Amino acid sequence: MSVRPRCDRTLAWRALQGHYQAHGRTLDLREAFARDAGRVDAFSCQAPEVFADLSKNLWDLATHKLLIELAGECGLAERRDAMFAGEAINTTEGRAALHTALRAPRGSGAPFANEVHAVLDAMLAYAEQVRDTAASGIRDVVNIGIGGSDLGPQMVVPALHGVAHPQIRFHFVSNVDGHDITPVLQRLQPASTLFVIASKTFTTQETMANAAVARQWFVDQGGRDIARHFVGTTTNLAAAAEFGITTTFGFWDWVGGRYSMWSAIGLPIAIAVGAGHFRALLAGAHAMDRHFATEPFERNLPVLLGLLDVWYRNFHGFTSRSVAPYHQGLKRLPAYLQQLEMESNGKGIDREGRPVGYATAPVIFGAEGTNAQHAFMQLLHQGPQAAAADFIDASVNERLSANALAQADALAYGTADATLPSYRRHPGNRPSSILKFKAFRPRDLGRLIALYEHKVFTQGVLWNINSFDQWGVELGKQMAQNHLSRST
Ligand code: F6P
Image 1 (cartoon, rainbow, N blue to C red):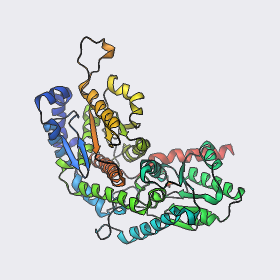
Image 2 (image 1 turned 30 degrees about the vertical axis):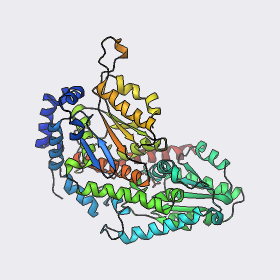
Image 3 (image 1 turned 45 degrees about the vertical axis):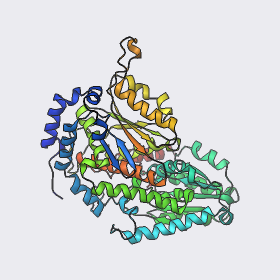
Image 4 (image 1 turned 135 degrees about the horizontal axis):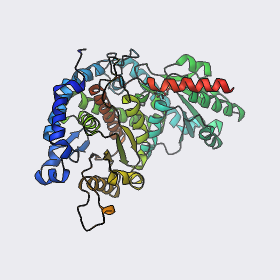
């Protein structure tokens, strides 16, 4: 792969710096809308069934053009194609990053198609067996996993509640604190419970501890047939077998933990919604993959969102970004995106091993609307420093949509009313993006998640970092182990 200049040494970066000083810094959204009646059209982007209104961002046509030039100079197209082709772009671990292959339909030419579809078919057949509650007797599914082996299913199952199996309850246990697993176990009967032990490595301390607690509980409660009531989703089939698990659904080292909900890690989702809806979730993500792979950058939504983040982080100096999904079922989306964005791009060393010398991932925080409005939105409206905001309008109901739109309007326009006391005025000119879905079906959720994945990828390419490793979490794990061995 060709070596590209550092992003901050490109011509486009220099031009963006000049543009920021001359216009970007002082751009006023109210004036911009007053000047240009076509601003919404000019700054909107239609991706597969997601309409993005990006007009309330602090940019103009020149910013847009320069950011796209920056993506070109940083080799985004080449890197993107290398990811889809299965090149070992995760250089510190010598691995590909092929989550896109997990949702590619048969015959589409994606790498590892045979392996992927063999596991997918087997997993979905198993999920359907469990869903047949009269035959399986299963009424409770407990997913034991952490990080990427927890957050995807934990976020998706409630989001798709409307199409979920009405007689099976789902529980997600991740924390090594017994306060997580104990109240769950108290509500269960061994004969009607299925434990999914989800761990890519099958060595993660928290997951192994919780799995052992669950197994002990199962035996103590007179449970019979561990092999029938425990299933593993992992790349480490040998360790799962050692635990006593005989039913396992595997995946591969080229599936990153935080990109793994499309793999066997999605088993609880498949049990919840069934094979058809799971395939629709994958199809939605695949549609976004095609959009990312083929649309020119000017109309490529993940690219535009990634570029906006670079504009805010590296030129405006914003340190955080909020995300508010207007859909109660998506209440775990902010937590999911925290891992996706901060574990992927919270890096200070570039792909050549040098300190980056510029800011990378912002802090991501959020909550479901409208609860977010009664929690942190105050700071976004009136705090002395601006931060960008994403509003996801999932069209659940009119009242929610109205609130999402109103928040974006209030941030952008503020209040000019000089008769109000200063503490009641809103400065306005605060940026936001609105992602609008026509409906919120499994395929829409697939699109949304893939959209954020590719946005994160875009940022990682511009910042020239490896978005697919996570060495920063290792030291703490080791040190916890040291503390443990000293105290026992
Ligand atoms: O938190 C670090 C991490 O390695 C995540 O990247 C991963 O999703 C999580 O731990 C769980 O790992 P595993 O699936 O191997 O148990």
